[in-house]
Length: 331
Image (cartoon, rainbow, N blue to C red; front, side):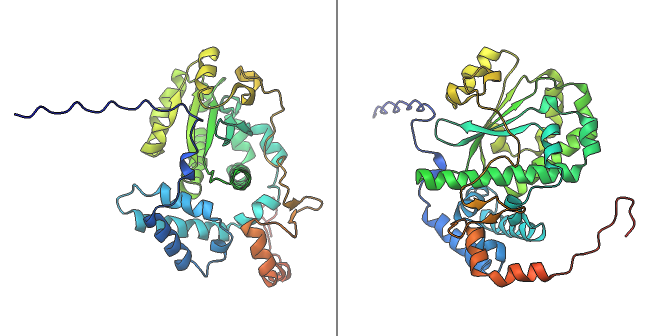
């Protein structure tokens, strides 16, 4: 009777930051084939031309574990293109959304620093949100502000990819729940959060590398048991819930983010101010006018498309403005 050889010892996982970003791996033959198919099928869609390969790859990899991955990827990618066209999302990065300064007062969300692999890090202070103020501010304005946030984040990753010459489309996210309580348990509050989560899930898939939830009270954990059903199982695996121990929370975050990149209020050493939407400036956009415009040498796919199709911009300028209802609902 042959004796079985001992099972090979499992390799210890390497510390985060010592290897290239997972998303930077070369496309497989199947991924490349699907990318070509998506591009060809949507070749007449204007937003296909303005969408970078980085985003197409996100959709391919984001839906690769579905029961029918190819069918699902085609459906979700086309739906995203239609949404961008109907909502004029390509223009969002050039135009400040309505009441953006007020949005920043109500919704504390920041893109701040990098993780150990050079990915952006985002922070949200959900415990500081006042549910009644959010409802009064309006869901539409909140959605517009959040879309601007995601467009800034996506464009930043596009620039990092070209700066590092390696594909980067993920980020680390930190949600601080200090101040979160029963006032946040109403359906209006978590209904609004659900809508925002839906935007990310449908139109910005495969972007989250890691999510830290700090100061997670029993109140939040109760709410989480309700909303977690809307979260993809793979996303749930990337979430780490942490309590109120600031030092312990800092040590956990330091596994992914160097201390000099973590804001001071969370125990880190980064003293730079934290800004909300519409403060980040990109070197390929001319901000002298409002709305801003692409610089002549900009390599962003949206800029290239505009240069190659000047007639479409003129058509939009010549189109008569639609009647909009006044504040009292009259025409």
